[in-house]
Each structure stands twice: as structure tokens, then as C-alpha cells.
Length: 457
Image (cartoon, rainbow, N blue to C red; front, top):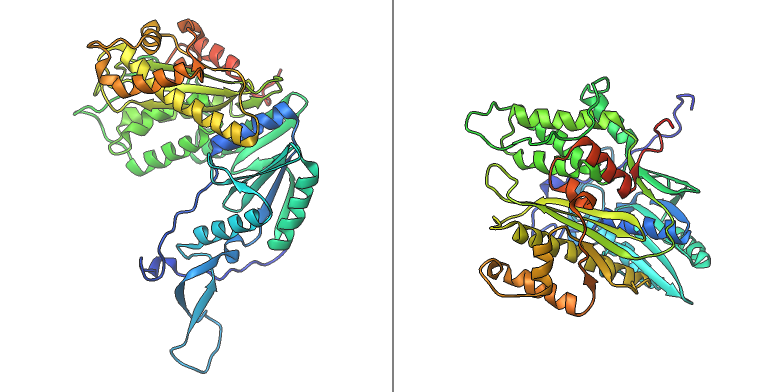
């Protein structure tokens, strides 16, 4: 790198903001890869020693085929003698509202022509089974990851895509959507270190005093009539950046879910809570997820709820962690949308959310050709909730969770999963439902496989 200009790049962009719905475009939706699916693939790659290749499609949107009649002004600099002439677009251009959809449609068609099937659990995942082996490709707009245990098919796929589109081979998976991927003998490590350092630099917090937890215990954050307002735009921008960061940092998931509840009218207390998260990030900017080889592909989960924890409306917060092959792949911390009348009810609703996630993971692994053979475990620390699930007795405390009860009963009878009891101190999902002490917090992180490969040893 000597600072010299390597190449000039110019791109013709259409003025998509002048398009009219129903005339110039119809549907614009285009799916993008779920990062949950990416983490599941990484856990499989770590457990089964699969290679990970990354590719980029050059000028992806220009490959899309247009189904609508779209006209565009003559580009500036193009001289024509006729007046009043316009261009009719045959292919998509950057800037058009339907470009992402047209590109994804074109890519899907190319993959299907090559014998790949679109996965039902995630439409951006394409799979091909051949001679008992599998090849998987997942795409996020124009960035793609290819993995699997069929090396010959992976090589053929690379050659095929190179004939269909102009591809850029980025080699082994190193940096995907702002997420750094480091692979070693120990496993695959995911972090957003650069993203954290950029965030701290932009906010002027690079030299701040570090905090050991992302949120204080008994924080009592809520909406109060006498609260002092703060800069709304800055608050929303910061919280938005933290939400993206929680894709590799489940340790801040609860704190981020709390501060994101006040986007519409943030106060100084809320802003201080956001700055506290930044101070926590300063303590270990390189923290992330480690995917190791555990020799199995079992699916397990931990579900917990904090009953009536919200000081404003007394709604409960539920959270779950799920593991595939011993590696943490998905998590959620979310305020429930109804007020629970008992802690058992709050736990029960939380269990239902955890079960839905486990069922999705089971479906995804089955499509990949690795259907779980053992019963899935969802660890819960509330004996009342487990008892209601296993012995569906109808009484006043359970009749308002009727649908959840029947759903859980059906899955239990089919032996799809079971609910082992776990002591509260061993409940890993605790950090997703409330602010806990520094010691308990860091113990949970160790058990979850959240560490820092950049920390001095």
C-alpha cells in the first residue's frame, strides 16, 4: 500500500426515488441471510472440519432481469441528436427499488439450474446432497459463504458461478458483514473487534473508564413524567449500532433490549445506560463467540424469565440460549407482550419461545442432512412451569396460557424434547432476563463459550 490510485470506479445509478409503485415496480422484498443460520453453519464447520470459502459477486445488481417496463432519462454525457428520447431498461441498475429482488431471483434461478435446492428454514441457504455428502451456500445480497464436506462439488460450484457471474474469490472466511472470523486448532472465533473500536472512537469513548458489567443491578429504567430528555437522533443511532453488535455479543443482549425500549423518548438516564454499555465494551473490545469441536450435533437450550421485571408496566422479560453441537448459536432477550399473573406463567411463555427456536434449529439440521437423533433438552429453573407442562391440569393459574400448554404437551408426547430442571445458579439464560452481579455474569460467559482471544494471557 503506497497510496497510489489502483483504479477509477464509476457506476451509473438510476433515480429510484422517483419510481411509482404499481407503474415502475411491484414487489421489492428480497431475503437476506439470517445470522442465526450463519452461526449454525459455523458450528457444523467447527464440529465436522468443513472448509469455509467466501465469495463476492462484482456488480451483483446488474445481473438482475426486469419484469416491469422501466424508462430512464438519457445518462448525462451521452450525446444524441433526437430530443425527448429515453432509455428503456432491460436489466436492473443500482438505485432501482426492485434491483435487490431481481438480483436474488436471478441468483436463485442459477443455483436451481445447478441442482441446488432452496432451504425452507432460510431461503438464502442453498443445499445440494450428493452421494451422502452435502454442499451449502448462504448469500447476503452479494456476499456468499460456501461450505460442506463435498470438496469436488464445492470446486464445481465455484467454476459454475464464475461462468454465470463475475466473481471475486476472497479465499477462506475472514471478514463477513463486519464480523471477524478467526480459525485455529481450537475452533472458529467470531468477534466484532474493529466494529467496537470504531464505535468507541466515533463516540469519543476510547479512553473511558471500563465497566465490568453492561448494566447496573436494580437499574429501574423506565419512563417517568419528570425525566430530562436527551438528543433523540444520537440515542437512536447509538442503540442501532449496539443492536448490530449483539450478533456476536450475547453478553450485551439484555442491556441492549432494555435501552431499545426508549427510542421514542429517551432521557439522560437512558443515555447514561447506553454509555455504560460502551464502557463495558471498552473493558474487552475483542470478546466474541468460540465454536469448538465437541464431537456431537445435539440441540439444547436454556430458557428463563424475570417475572414482572419492568417497572413501568410490570411485564416480564424472557430469554433463551440455544446450542448446536455444544456451541452457542442463537439467543434472544425480549419483553413479553402481556402481563403474567405468576412467575410460572412468565416462565411458561418464555419456554414456548425457546421451543419454537429449538424446532426451527431441528428443521434446519434435518434439511442439512443431520437430523438430531437424541431428544432435545430445554433447561428450565422453574419447577411449577415444568409441572404444568408435564401434567396439564386445568386450573385458574393455567387457563390463560391454554394455547402454549397444548403446543408444549403435543411436543412432549412426541418426545421431541424434554424439560430437565436446572438450579437457578446454573441457569445460563439468567443474563438475558435481568442485570446480575459481576461474578455470576462472568461465570455464565465462561460456560457459554464467550471469550476474548485478544486478551493477554
